[in-house]
Image (cartoon, rainbow, N blue to C red; front, side, top):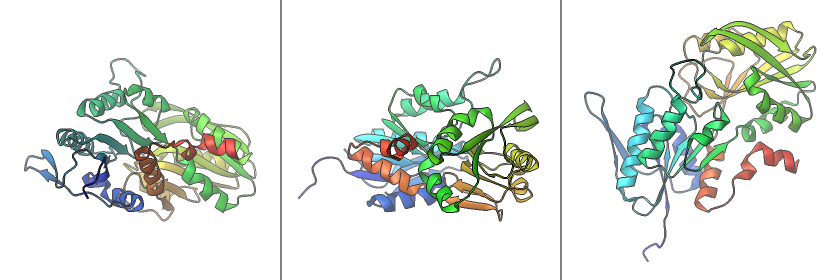
Amino acid sequence: MERIGPSVKIFSGTNSQYLAEKIAGKCGPGLGKISIQKFSDGELQPIFLESIRGDYVFLVQSTFSPSDNLMELLLMIDAARRASAYKIIAVIPYFGYARQDRKDKPRVAIGSKLVANLLTAAGADRVITMDLHAPQIQGYFDIPVDHLDSSAIFIPYIQNLKLENLTFAAPDVGSANRIREMASYFNTDMVICDKHRKRANEIASMVVIGDVVGRDVVIIDDICDTAGTLTKAATLLKDKGANSVRALITHPVLSGNAYANIENSVLEELVVCDTIPLRGHSSKLKVLSVHELFASAITNTYENKSIASLFIHSQLRNK
């Protein structure tokens, strides 16, 4: 009998296929067939190799550098709309340009707002993403945004560490709210590493607000780029008397000298999620997968169920 009603189809862009395959496998339908052709001049053309008429179409693509990843996603959304998909959901584990969330100096772009406009104009009906650099970016969209929280992955990992003198550290003031929630969940203390920058990716000074003597410190943040801030914070925490310092970071951008900085740092380990594929190696790196979390979000979206249980706020209420 011919099916009635929309079904789920999951497709992937070129550089997120490693993650999309795990998400699709967990959801059940497997990864859909798509070809992304590239002309000799670099121009991209996605082609769906199966019918998606009347279907829920989930397009998995993180928009990390290069910008081809974002362009691929926009073209896939446009192709799905023109192929009469019922709903088009952009699944963006790492939302690029999120650090450009405001005019912090004259005559600059607000890149995250521009990307939000592009996704909406292309035809996306919903966005599922994780740990935006600035949570208010959700408000840049005129379509629903499901903003997943890496705490659902990090909390079990931290529990398994069984650290007796656990203290959480924010690598900057902007991360204080995220750290406060984690500290509340574990009923422990938090400190803040207050930094002052000369320019992007270059720190002029940093101080620790709070006591870390004899403590096992866990730094939590959303992005690690050059690892300059992270490794300087770790050194400062050790100098202030911390027993150990480790970091849990959602998005391993890891550009420039990041891998060398991490390897030569005082960090016990750097735990990251697989929202971005690693481009190098360090013996201190450990990867946790987000595929189960995104698979749950996709399933709940299709079944019109709440995804609130995937957030730390619900875990705090139910603790």
